[in-house]
Image (cartoon, rainbow, N blue to C red):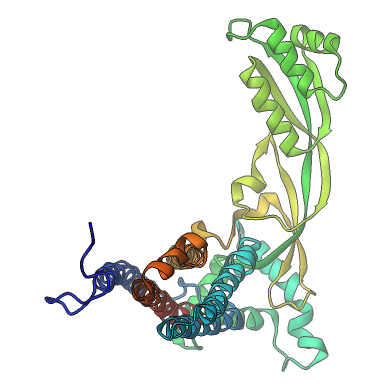
Length: 408
């Protein structure tokens, strides 16, 4: 059965089926993204002064990705124009250029921009005095001497921090920014922002404290579970540990200890973890939260201290934070704040549309998709035109996203 109006326009709308369908789909997309944009605007306008994060996006990265998507819109039109002229080779050239731009956009977004946020942290401390001491320790040199030795006009640490605070939460200095900063400085509600360069992580002893014979696990199966966790594959040691208890591992890392605790718990064992000491780890951990840093292990925290490099300190603001002083620790992830929650929602949904567009473009470049060109050139050209409308919409969404998230 032949489907009507795949090439010729419908008499009631003046559009062929695919174009009518894509316009109806785009209307639903406008409502979806419109709701998200409206939510963002209402949340931002309704936020109390000094509570809405700003200036955290990399303007150059956002502008670069904007140019990439604008170029891709031009390339998809050129690909369609080549088909209208019957030039399949020209279509392939411009369609591959469109795909390359889309892949580059996602690579920058998912491979660079988001990971850089997941390694960037805000730390709130329990005590205002300690917070001010850490600000002074981290910013004393740069506040006194300026960047690279230039004069800072005698600015002290508090004024330097105030400048950072104003940039982050206000577009310019004002009475509101002054009052909000004074209150935050006095109450210690400011956050230290920067990167974790290293941390002192617990070295953990894993000790078997008992075995439940009624746990539904046989002695042989329990011993086998122990053998898998022992450094030396000795079944006699396993049987002895099951009967008498004792140390399974000493001074092991957190991940190994927790895996052993879980696996042995499934085999009916009761396991006790205790901190034998702390070892310095040079790393930039991903998406840490307070619980991960201050998790209790036998009455001691998993991490005793964090080496933290403050933003805007020009690599001079290296401070050490004791775990006991940390009230809250969070990477720039969706859970961090309302701003990042809606930022990842909107940009993630947009990136999903870009990814879906890449799949459709690849399909139209494969023999299964190009087969329609050899059967009905006009219908294939219409298909590419319909996709082009979708792709223009995806680009248009980003053109709205860029200013409200990166500039405003």
